[in-house]
Length: 93
Image 1 (cartoon, rainbow, N blue to C red):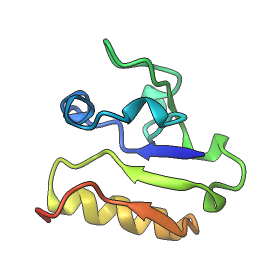
Image 2: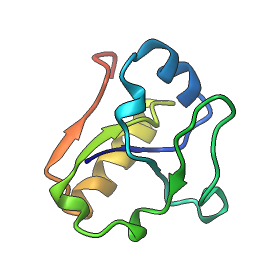
Image 3: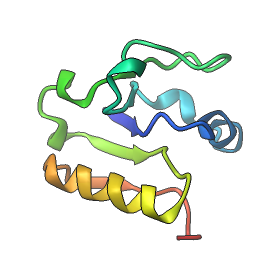
């Protein structure tokens, strides 16, 4: 499975430019207040990463690309979770 990580404000804009966004199983985010919510016009549910078993065996597509510091913290969090396959959809950082 492929999961997004980071339910950021700019995620719908990222989804606009990436055609295969519907292949994501869900968007993972540590913020409990976003759990089980959806974006308007984007039918992908937001889930807490702890709700996914064997997260390290899945591919994670970083969707929280607000800044370099956010990207670094998300990448560090994914490494802490033991994720082996991390996709960062940009070369700007």
